[in-house]
Amino acid sequence: MSDTPQSRFPVPALADLPEDIRERIETVSEKSGFVPNVFSVLAHRPDEFRAFFAYHDALMEKDSGLSKGEREMIVVVTSAMNSCLYCVVAHGAIVRIREKNPRLADQLSTDYTRAEISDRQMAMLDFACLVSDQAAQVTDDDLEELRDQGFSMEDIWDIGAIAAFFALSNRMAGLTDMMPNKEFYTLGREPRSSGPRLVK
Image (cartoon, rainbow, N blue to C red):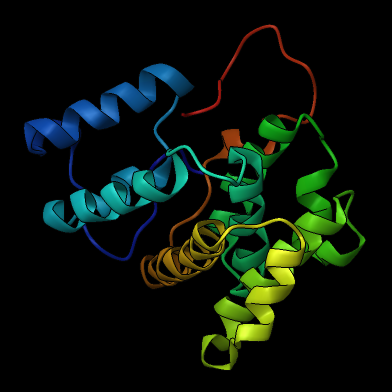
């Protein structure tokens, strides 16, 4: 597998990027030990790069009734539905690390209904899949089922918004032919004393 970011569109050199985007990519590289290809590929359109990652951060980094691990679970399951190799592999690595479970990402991406998760998380993922696949079919009863599991209305918004946002991400990965970095495949599978770390 090549270390060069793959895309059907031009991938700009780091030195040619606007300062704010270059600084963000350098920060990610320092934390993780590599540059996830999504940063390099989406830098082709700087304004859209900024908008994409602003929305990503608003959904994935804020305080919420969903844990960071649960948010990543949503990404893996809905990305698997959308056949997005990049997001399944990249966010699967983050699931393994967040949940401290080296088996979970593989379970989620293959058959989440048999994964090692709680009933609450199963309801969360069922709803995320509904939004990802048939958002027009969401009913008030679907929301009530989540409320019965202890989710607030704000949590339900988050579940749906993450599924919707990553549908965009999945489709951009397909459009560009974005492939996962090789580092993602091994992250979180075995304890490590050194090497790549989780990008926060």
